[in-house]
Image (cartoon, rainbow, N blue to C red):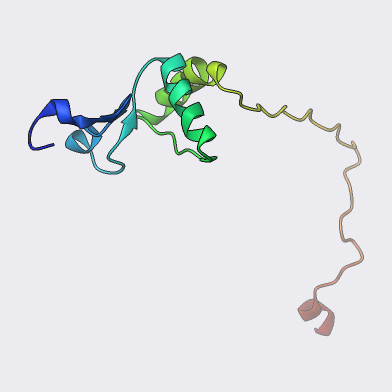
Length: 105
């Protein structure tokens, strides 16, 4: 970038200035939810099927991605399985199995 901040935008909404403020990945997609979603969809159309999304602080950024970006992407959100009722008597698992070392003693 030769010290020119204008040179840090290397593609629409793809900014290379992250490396100036922290280590790790040197580029970031920047913009509002619909804009970043559009860029991700463009990369997906080129055949890219995995993306590493990160931000700081991690927890807050995870909520921001879920609330501001995911609604604009066709992402499958898995259903949370319902808890299975427990048998009040408990259950016996491998009750007829004796470890080899114990069986020899």
